[in-house]
Image (cartoon, rainbow, N blue to C red; front, side):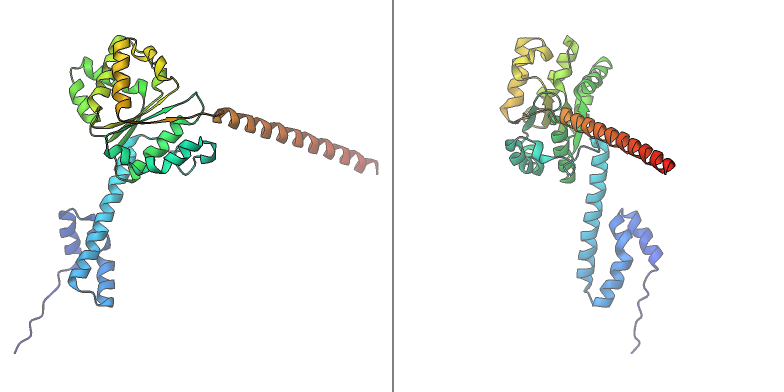
Length: 281
């Protein structure tokens, strides 16, 4: 009997085939996994299963990288650097649940209210970063920038198309809605955006104005009422109370600067006296 010897294709040929199939995880790991499989006596099924897991993880990592880049979230406002002890107790308790993203799945909104400097933007952005890590598509924008983007689209007769692009995000973070003093056209495009996402997609909003003052944003009482109604119908509301975090940080830095200056002056004075004594002796 004549034994048949099966010739294995060269590895560079295999890598080319895998790239053609758009399997980056296979391309990256197939050689090392093949060595390990041969050494440990894996079956072909086990070998392929392990490579498939690595492929899925590779795609997940790259997808998150793309989502992170597109999110435009401030890189420094993450959960890791958030001082949770400064947050109101209720917000501290809610934070892990909000980061899990269940409210996104339900198409609910997140509204963060508080005076300037209370950490609204940091909290909402930290949640946004965590949502991206869980596979959600998030976009951060100052409210005025969104309004100008929509106005430009309306002038160019492509507002519907622009709203469709924004609908691709599971969550849109509108920062500082209270600072937008709307003209009628600006108010209309903002209301249109909120109405389009109602009960389907989430918005996360920070505002230094309570609802009773939102007529300063939308001008018209009926439009104001309609906007608030859509936002709060399915919403989680957090209140950022307490002292200004920025003011506290500024005071601490001021104290540190004063202390450092005083110490430096004392050291210089002490050094001068020592030099004098040294000269006299």
